[in-house]
Length: 154
Image (cartoon, rainbow, N blue to C red; front, side, top):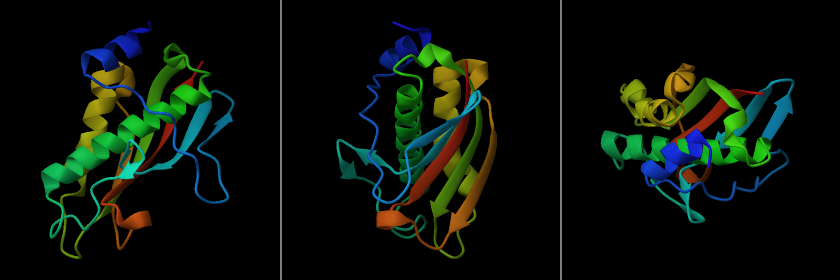
């Protein structure tokens, strides 16, 4: 078991089977030593979670949980990109966090920390990344958070 798999296990996280794209795109693209992972939603056991706008229907704490779930799904995609060997992950390079918030919602960085914190918990210093946390008027399936990512692999 790899060090990353050991960390996931210690956190009680079992990576799911990567989500199948619902339109004309792929879950990830490898280009050189980088993996570009398509936006991941907060889906658990095939069920969409955390539906609604942050601020009115979804609390900041629940939105952080949604971001963490998106990050778990990102790791599932990168594991598939690495043919099941997470030890090939060199680092998380960048996260793009989209928050479906009320018009006056401004705590996007706090929500994004749900994903950022998980990357550092699992990857250590290699989980420290660049990031954008932006508001969105809506997101697919009405979810509160969607996240895409870039990883470096070997």
